[in-house]
Image 1 (cartoon, protein in one colour):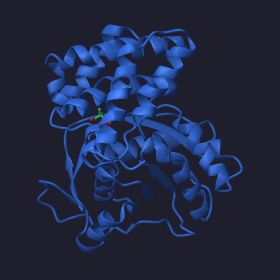
Image 2 (cartoon, protein in one colour; image 1 turned 120 degrees about the vertical axis):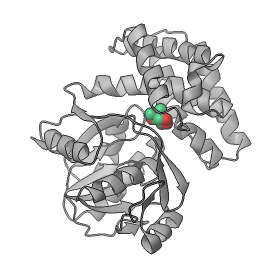
Image 3 (cartoon, rainbow, N blue to C red; image 1 turned 45 degrees about the horizontal axis):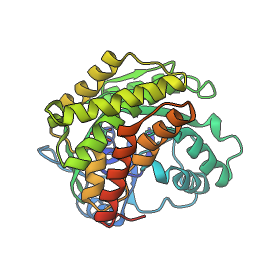
Amino acid sequence: MRIVVFGAGAVGSRFAAALARAGSDVTIVARPEHVASVTAEGLQVDGDSRPPARLPAVDRLPKGTSTELVLLTVKSYDVETAGTAIAVALDRPSPVLALSNGLGIEERLASGLTQGGWTAPEAWVLRGVHTIPARMVRPGVVAETGRGEMVLGRNPALDGWSERLQTLFETAGFPTRVSDDIRRETWKKALVNAAINPVTADHGIPNGRLVEEPWRGQALALLREGVLAAASAGYPFDLADAERSVFGVARATAQNRSSMLEDLDRHRRTEIDAISGVLLSTGRSHGVAMPATVRAIERIHTRERERGAEP
Ligand code: KPL
């Protein structure tokens, strides 16, 4: 399958390398320094003895690009702009699988695609969520930092695509399932991110250390509030199940540094607003008190300022 991975940072590059090795014809759209290394030496997976994956890399998608699928792996705050760039560049609409962290991603993507000229963007958007971790070692080299799962939603306008993509990801080595309720899966993943990411980013610890105190207690306080907010929006979760999900992901990605911690280390803006920020505004609008979430958001914004994060 011809695939464009739009926003190939660490995670997008892990997918790109695995899909290319499994036989897909993959192009990545990435930051200029990553593009330069991949173009010169290929895309290397750290510790993999095979030669680097050779694939086209560009920092802008050229007009008239032809593809069968776009994997969207940009940061949540870039989803709308990316949608516009995709719609402007592609020679005709194709399915876009949105894999970014956070809530409200489908709406942002549809808005971007509309601004780029697509008339019925909802017909092309598929949502997926995953817990597959990766780290950018240096431009051109990505590390696989644990195990995870891909969950794909459905779109009635894209009949059979979810199963087709399930096979695609499974063949590339990623455990994948199709869900009939991707909105709920998106909330569940947001709860996991809201518990893991701010705590690991604030304290500079890998995900595995979240099982230890005092971080465990901090993550649980965020999770409890997140579960109340999700319930207020019509997505009830059992707290014990949610706890098992959070600590299951923390263990399966023990060596990984969360994307929020990596963002701070690279002086980049984090996704705190699309994760904890949306949980907070949802909870507040239903009268849920969320003091731990308020503090976590403030701490991460302070860290962003301390690191001089790009706006
Ligand atoms: O989604 C992640 C992230 O870091 O953003 C997890 C799965 C928590 C891996 O770190």
